[in-house]
Image (tube, rainbow, N blue to C red):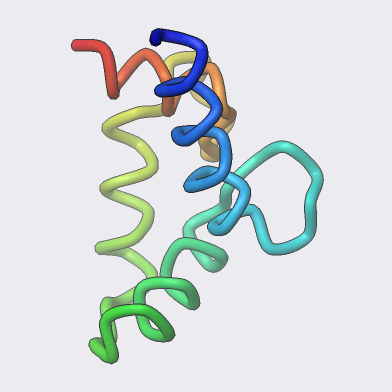
Length: 72
């Protein structure tokens, strides 16, 4: 069951990783939110969310950081 949940989480993560480099930037997050929700968020709002999940301080969110947040 955990593998199914992790696979589903990876698909969600990959939807936000527009360039497929394994990292989600604030700009990627902002673009997908606009597309999926039809609402605009600012670059700084997107960066705040990324920073809240960014464990290694690189300003981006990896799948591992996303997965850790999902399991809190």
